[in-house]
Length: 154
Ligand code: NI
Image (tube, rainbow, N blue to C red; front, side, top):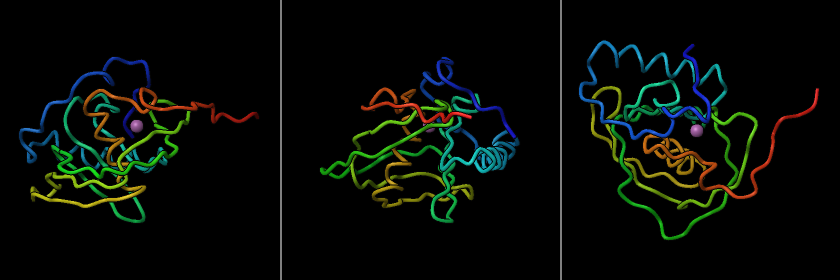
């Protein structure tokens, strides 16, 4: 399992660079390591900056589906937005409500090197936007209202 970097580490604030070569040994090792780390940490998504790599690579697990997004880019956003609660493995113990477009289309390269366009709405759209924000050095706490502690006693 990779070590997850937490706020206020400045790595989380840097802009990530595109992945140049999906087939490089580094990337081919990083993808399964990120998936394992996300699953063990019980996260729904993980962006490469969270494990110390400022590159455009994101893993997501949602409703039994795994998404590996390389060089992702949101190409359409709905006019309508929703507030929804978010947390982040890099901001442990904190949750807050973030207003985001309800539906998006995202363009990315998958782990096989295939160009993909995915239409997502509601929770999946929210997760994708949260993870892509990481690639721009943005954390959900920058956008959230009603931040609260999720730490429980005992
Ligand atoms: Ni996060």
